[in-house]
Length: 276
Image (cartoon, rainbow, N blue to C red; front, side, top):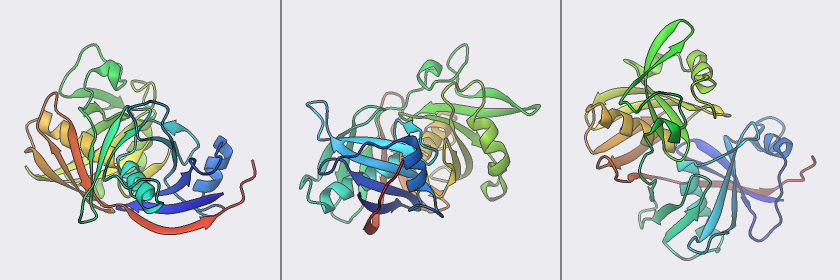
């Protein structure tokens, strides 16, 4: 099977062309591809596939390193768009991509950056999904006897955003797994740890559902900015510094789409024999 290794500010992917070759992955095969010692190594495996809806240009499927399929990946969709162009599968600079989380519009910029219309955030608890009696700006979350204050946001996939004073020393490794599998998030959740530097700048680390902490999370950056703006901590355009690099996120407010701009880099191409 032919593959391409790519990354979006360190959030790395194995990208498979399911348009010109047959791809039918088992969860075990996904885990093997993602394994950094026995496979290729990645945070997620991405499939570029033919669209199944007439208004879409391509279909995009995302598998976490643990083999689970998820709805959306912001860094991944930028890489997918660059992959489609580099592989000669499209010459369009504007694409509408079909995902489990809904349609996503992607714009390849002349300077090599990629801008993504991530759509409006979903804030009703049932849409995240998050178990709460009613929608609120923040929610209490009981973890190991402590009560945390989080924002709950869906960007096509679920996010819990926790504000911290110093993201470098935040307990991501210990607290991230507890938030990810908290009973109030029935489909698990990505846990974001956000430090507000000023109104146009945050620092962020994300413990991703099914992958652990990654160097970057595009949907996590979007969710953090939404959560910060709802709390009136941030302006409309925010630079988000993640361990792997910077994303620019813009959100005008309620009912408006979240816009994300960042790079997508091809690392190498190869072939791998897959056994179940």
